[in-house]
Length: 115
Image (cartoon, rainbow, N blue to C red):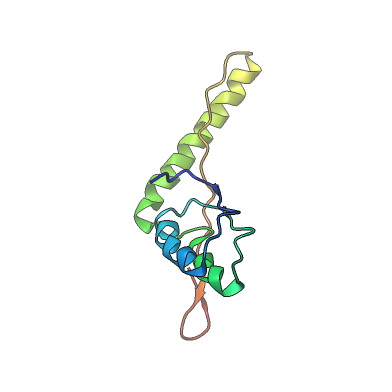
């Protein structure tokens, strides 16, 4: 399974609503998808609605938060180091790219926001 796939164009394939519902299993596993093209498949809105719950950001696992925070600190140290290297006209170190975290907020039984 390619977990880096961001775009998948399945247009012009004559898929049925049943076929699209079967694809939902694949989309559930591959949460990195950001776009799936289904144009010109004669599908109805009801055929593709079940797929929508599999797109977008997935919650960040709480057990990985500490490591992510450490990675942020390390990245910030590299950025500060690179400022000094740049001023000295020396080669800079590559800065790691980290995804932004978005907390998942929902309401508790009293209507208060809970993350």
